[in-house]
Image 1 (cartoon, rainbow, N blue to C red):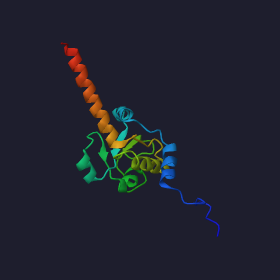
Image 2: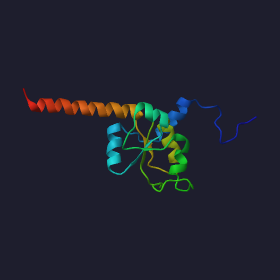
Image 3: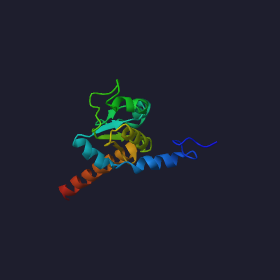
Image 4: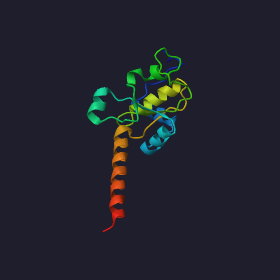
Length: 146
């Protein structure tokens, strides 16, 4: 039996699917994502409510759980948010940056061509914020002098 033309000759691994998804994205560091948000990008946290409660919230992100993401951001969907647009710059965030890559690639498949994700996810964002706070504190103590 010959495989259908739209199916790969062999099943792909999740690592292959993830690599393919990421090859289509211009992934952002937390600092780059924050700068994009400041310029109007729509930052979306796709982590489940329980995970956001346990790990922490990102106040600048809009929570949209993964299982409804495409319906909320596809402008053709009856369940879309008013902000939904094919030209919307969407930056997707998950806990560690794996699921968000798959989600951003799925949004691109819907024609939301500016969708991308955050390298390292919320964990990297939190570490970036902590290092920025530490750097600011160190600089303030240096500025005060002896």
